[in-house]
Image (cartoon, rainbow, N blue to C red; front, top):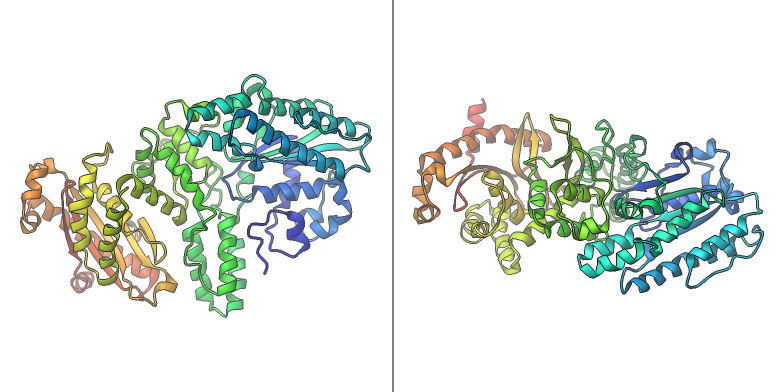
Length: 604
């Protein structure tokens, strides 16, 4: 199979025989919904290929290629009357630079729109009723000229706008007041972008623009456009479009079976590959209907497929570097007052991140200047694909969760930057963590956390005061998705494991241990100790404190059941080491490894 990684040209995909997941069955529904639609999805989620598919379907100049492009697809078997009935024009604002002055950005925008209008004029020159005039310093006038040239033809315009908010997001994410001034010049009053969208709105009032389809990541620009463009219908959260961009699991499974068969893998290995892809890439839901299926990021899936087919093995780094740029969105939120707590809550899952509804109207001024509350920050992360709909709370609010393991890695990296900004300190902690992976010795890691990591919490204003603190400390040091499938709060046999590290299948040839950790916490106040007093105690004295002994016993009592759940899921191939860890305040740690033989005797 030929996988179109990085290719968003539908004509190339279909004419050159690339892998394509058919979404053309959505076309009749899109036609029925309205003539000006806005569709939001995270970056690198296949929006450009969707627009290219629509462009080829409606373009009058592609009528003679309809069978080649759509004959084997759903829409080819039952086309709508509108196929190949439009002039098509595409604008892609991801190509508009956000650097320089407001005038520089205006000229960059005009150059792009004028280039697309010039392409339009050349493409349809034999069908237009008059020449299209290009105005170098006024793309709005150029656009109006293109509409005039269409006036006496039997065709109207389908305008496709890709990444309509791209350069606006770049300006806002910079966080500099100058960015707001530049943006205001584009959106406020008769700003350039606002005027351009007003021309689109006006063109749809009987002057040749019949349909408009806009994609983007967030509603930020739409909010600032206000009366400039208030005619679009947002279809982002409608259940029927949950998988419009993205792959379903059945599509992933069929493709993996084909690849594994070519590689000579057994059926059990194909199932194992699916489990890997599900853990690392699945988890997105783009509708508040919680019955909707979770879907896969298509760019990540294609990245995996291409490597898997070539090497008959998994990519070492499951995080495609083209998706790693999403860490900037997490960093933006972490930089805001209270944002660090949002990042920590997202990783820990407690307290639950919940909103009554996603914020759907916030502009660049809100992003740059306004005080950000938790719903704003959580909504922002959801639009950018690093949180997703995970269910509803008992009171009906929308729960927002991290979708999968590659995104969790981005959060962990940000927490490392927040709490262990000194790279030498982080390297020291990782070295201590290696002792656990390789030998099952937890003591060096506990020593590091006691002596080097816990003091960090004295200078941070976070609200934790429980075992989440302990788990976060261990997670940020142990996280290693090159060698492990890492999970937090893994559901096992009617209970939950605090932290599991399961060796990836292809890494099982090396001397790495599987790890299961259960955490408990004893507040200093309950132990009637100060931090200084706790630090002055010997390790043996800490272990003999009644509350510490009781919490350790609780953790050890839980572990046999969670251990059995892991063994049932992954089989006897696990080299599983199982530990209970108790933290006394943010000062001291006590740990004990589960006596497996005694545990098995107890089960019998």
